Length: 192
Image 1 (tube, one colour):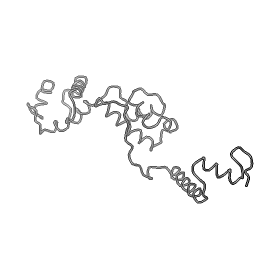
Image 2 (spheres, rainbow, N blue to C red; image 1 turned 135 degrees about the vertical axis):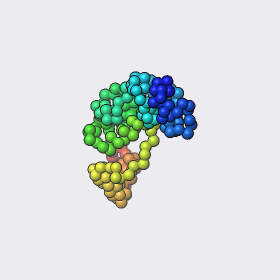
Image 3 (tube, helix red, strand yellow; image 1 turned 90 degrees about the horizontal axis):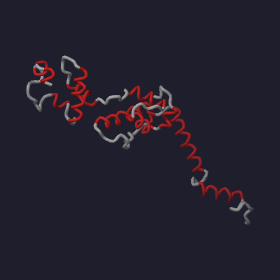
């Protein structure tokens, strides 16, 4: 940085590296390849003034060709992926759900955005993209009124089934039905 920016750099940061300086804190956790990527971005940018520490960190983590979150959301809805990270995030979110979704489906977009951020972070750190993503704990406020109504209806249905003594297992329900109809298993009337 001293060679690239001269006194503009040394005037604010100093000549030698200081482990207590804000730059050391902000760049903590980056590897050599990521810092080299950031320096390459500086050369391409060709600015006269050095960037701030957070700007430089973003340059270090920049992946060429990676679409923005908004562009990735549009690609996921269309099912046309211009980057592998979008494809992996769409798969983690659920391609079936994305095909049914609309552009303004905020709940699904939040899930996709979270998955996309995780996949992008993996890409930035050189990790495999396709690992599992832990699902956060949801709550009812994240559900639509239709989803809440459906859950309530299913709970009422299960309660009625239990009250009526109808078995939940298919085989048991069939045996009970045949017995009540007085039929044997082969279709003839059962003898009493």
